[in-house]
Image 1 (cartoon, rainbow, N blue to C red):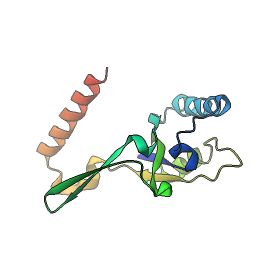
Image 2: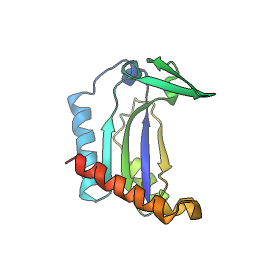
Image 3: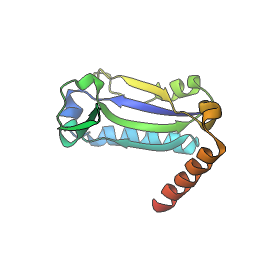
Image 4: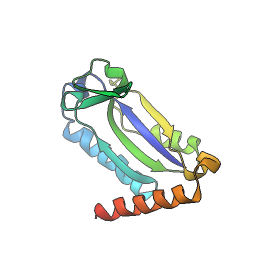
Length: 142
């Protein structure tokens, strides 16, 4: 099972406050534990929403809005993509994220859809296309 672990933004991340050397060390050590355990697939921090944009689709029209975005609690500051045996195991890993005692932070855990979750609508042809595109994308990253 794959899970996306979503670290929510706060006033500091949205203001572009960079982590301290100790925070970077702690997060690096945590990421190293994930890698050594063989569960981490990806993980990155995200720049503030002031450097981002939103694209809204409605009635065949698209509207682009540049950041920053005001609802800080709904924004994402970073993520991990992990592969574990259960949601309980994902929760146990998240409990170990190095968050400072004076920080008020929320981390969301969301399971990633797998091919079999889509049922018969995900035909053999669509599965082949998905696998081909995934392999092509992976080869371009190397």
